[in-house]
Amino acid sequence: MIRALRTCFIALACIAFSAVLAANIWAIAGVPGQGALPQLLSENMSRSGVEHPVTAVLLNFRSYDTLLEIGVLVIAGIAGISMSKTTSLEDPELRTSDPLLYALQRWFIPLMLVLAGYLLWAGADRPGGAFQAGAVLAATGVLMRLGGIPMDFLRPGLLLRLGLMLGFSVFLLAAVVSVIGGDAFLAYPPDMAKPLILVVESVLTLSIAMVLLALFVSAPVNDAEDPEEGDPS
Amino acid sequence: MTLSLLYAMAGAALCGIGLFGLLRLSHLLRRLLAFNIMGSGVFLIMVGLPQHQSGPDPVPQALVLTGIVVAIAATALAVVLIRRYYHQSGMTSLEGESGSREGGPL
Image (tube, rainbow over all chains, first blue to last red; front, side, top):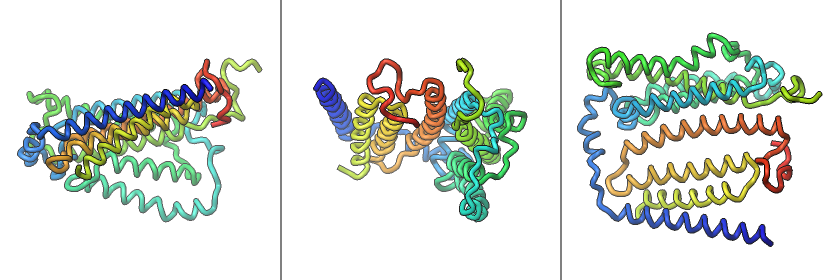
């Protein structure tokens, strides 16, 4: 009885929350837009080095957000790896041996790698970019792992650390170099913007894929083998 | 009432649904999913509301794209933590709550 009452109360509170939110959205939508942000963006597009506005915002005008974001990703990846129980993240015992999956991934992995490359390149003038490409690349890695293809670079060591840190460090380097050159933090010189964005996007793709893959790989806990610390037995 | 305003309203509804799940459910994995539904509602509001008057606005879209990637990484980290918690305590919900063991293994 008390449980049902509690559920009723929570449901009512949530409906009220939604209603207040919807009323606010309705009120905001009724106010004519006063922000000049879209106009400002379209006027400055020629200086950004890319043609697609979302990519321009992500990697040039608001690249500080993207820099912090890849920092958050790296921290999440490191925390995930440090939580994992398997000493080698590339554990042969966790592989599946499904002949159908094995046959399928011979077709899929090259296609997905090409798709990731296309998405990375397409970010310049249409929807696409580092995050989409990184997600596809990470999915390729997950497929490869499930299919039992050995991936030595996932062992904790130099390659894993390099892969995790590459995107963040190159991005930070690009930011600091512009400071040393006498400009603002993260302000690319206009004539160098396109190659800089391309380099940063490529390493970001690699790092994002690496972080997501490392988080996926570190999730399983092999409870059959090594006992927990603090286990009485 | 344009289509993009409808998206924002759907986002508000998703926020409410997610909040209900977050408060009502005790299984940690379900709570994580409910929290993600709430986040998706916020993303829908952020994309839908600025489109209402002057077409797509790239700035909130870029912010939401950043937010989605961070949300994925945070969710993956939360799954890792939940599995570790389950492995160590054998419970699927936090201590001090009723029905701790009703959810079964993750």
